[in-house]
Image (cartoon, rainbow, N blue to C red; front, side, top):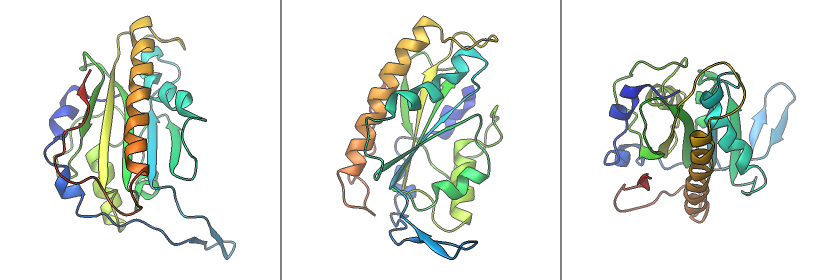
Length: 204
């Protein structure tokens, strides 16, 4: 779940710094153990984060479930995880766009924001916050060119598997925003990012 202070780490006007790293891995990757090559990574990675057992905390993962079958798998990779871990930094390297979707006790509406990797890490209920994940990805060689968070308001974090009605509605809204972001990215040639300003969909 996004901590209330995470939004201080998100700056819609600071995505330009991340965009300096517009390169992506377009070449096939070598599987060192098997000596074989694998297909290039899709340019967009969407990560839904949360606990499946704490009701609204699973909102990010529910978004990923809604997206399956709606986006081209050669352009968009979907991941559903309990928490952000250092291993995901390698998964994020060389991407054109990284989107992290998570529940937030601070958000009052679905909020889409660009993230600057230079931000100071904040308290975060998962093992890494998003800026720290990007910095680690940069240390591994190539951070994602653009990073966006989608925060979904969380109303009920009690034990259970059902979302609250309000959060269930916002999951559908968030999924629509992610689709727009992915289609905007995949319509551009690989290795490029959107030019001009950094204003995103914002709050809805």
